[in-house]
Image (cartoon, rainbow, N blue to C red; front, side, top):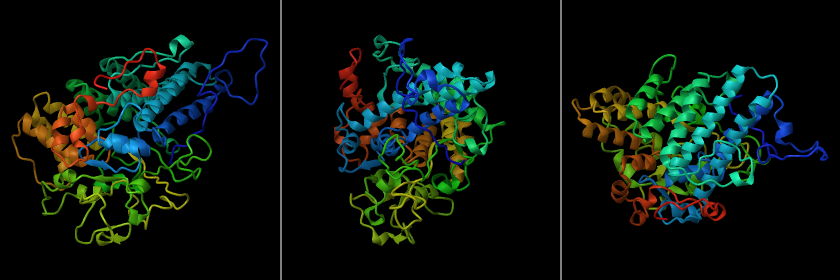
Length: 508
């Protein structure tokens, strides 16, 4: 199957119970004692863990997660329709913000499920040692990626590497971010050692060795371990890996080119299943997302929840292609008033830009359709099945460029930056750039390459440029940004209230 399907495991993935010899087993209830029987149980548990990445409320690549990861950037505006989204976008959020609370909760739910797989894999009959090792590696990748989501958003967070065995173990304090990153790196390292290079078509979407190495290298970049970042990411540029840039940048963001040669890991979506986009984990839930419908303009039956800032619009025009045209990434990312511009089968003149900015987001939209009412396939309301690309080869190249530049070797970054520029049809990069100039170019390219992909805020965060770049923007709410307070989200108020060992983040 092209898309990864999942089975909900309400009983085993929520609780484990003990029983005495006098208690009877309910044959209609799944428990940890009765669930882990065969390989299909393991696959179902993994699939249910993957599924949380697109969870409607708190999955990092679900609709609210996409709004959260992009919303604080200087390239993104969220209107005042859903109050808690507007608050995070304008830096007026508080510790009870629903968006950040849900991302926290879903990440820990996924970690709990991954830990259950690792704790119970030895109970499963009929599995070879090799199969167990591969499933353990996959669970470690899933745990590591959710730990990564937590640490880039909250900083110091609790580490959960085992299943609580008693009430006393339910509540744990925060670990310093340095310790969390160490666990992230450990999980990705061990995942990379045990995962396969690829799967057959029926298992498309599962984490591979390349995906683990990619996120491992990115984690080294976040921790400024430049030498290890270079060594790890460089592996992905040579055999046995075959990743490459798509010739047409925009092909990365349409369903017809899901799971392409540029993709290391993506979130599998499908306009199938239930018809309620907000159902949560039950039979009514669709395997698609509502992101495209929420982002679409009113004239295309969308909720027009977001808009790109003019700072992004202007950045795209800093440099023209060798033929004198706009950067092709601009055409793939934005819809604006250029000759022949059409969007959802309508000319630019049919649209009213409601927020005063010059453009709409085009990336990840089903813009060749008449509207977003019926989803990608017309099978259900609002459901888009364009996979969210969690890690692209373009990211690997630009992170490699950064890693060698930060080791004082900007000359070695030319190969990687030039590949990005060549695809965009840009002229040759000026020779002899020093470290400062090369980093300026890398920052510029990352701004354009990953707009709407949930990278900008976190790039500025790790570069220490949040205050400077947000101040130097037309972002609504920039006057409320305070550093270091807004560098990370506060610990959710519910967690502070319920966990006696939890302390709120500094400045909150």
